[in-house]
Length: 326
Image 1: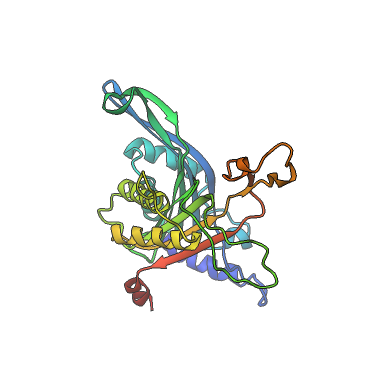
Image 2: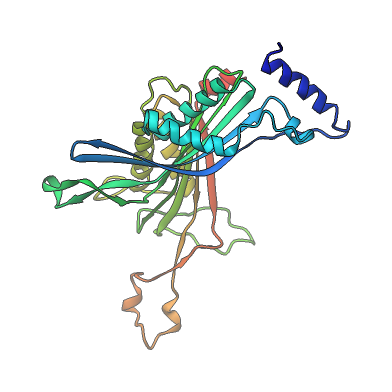
């Protein structure tokens, strides 16, 4: 009796013969998107929750489902959805990365004709409600509040030929603003320039960042994600009283990435995008009868402008990682 893999290999060969010579399927796969799952841990009176939105994608060894309409190898997307709930029930939800690794291992182990698994997970930002202030604050046992300061996500991919998965973690929608300690001067001054030097400006952006791990063994993914977020906020804002000066978005972005690589050795590469969220001075000079000169000495009213906006991005890698890939 032929193995399922041999049958799949023969079916792939037969299916490929159905493709005209001038065509080929260069990429393919299928899965289930937006599988929402919540897991509750009840430790006596104190409860904890995790809520994920999961996407699964499988790439099969054969393309016969596309080329011949043969569904015999398809693990239905509904079955993939059920797998998310069953594994959550059996193992719980810890970090998105750990659950993504668990799903990859399950699909590759369970189905020998699956060649590659890709998992995308977003975590819903629930925090325990707190009452009171400072050291007297009490945390509620079982009540939570949605705190969308930033969205956490991860992408976990593993091929059958690979012994370990590739794990990329990230954050999006981290919107920050500071009202001083930011400038933008001495940039190209030619016939196309209309923007004046800005020696003291509002700096606001919405940070998106993703980073890749060089290992997944014994990594505290929760700690690493929070550390990356802290590095970004610390580089942007600085200490509480005087802050830190930013000569450009580019420099702030680079320093944030550098701080991440210095503090988290398991991260091999990080990329970041910082679009401008502009706040322009409103021109009150057109209203001399209503606003006098003394009132215009200090800018207090600004015009928020989301579009168009500048977009600044960069990726920072460890040189040792680059060399190892060559």
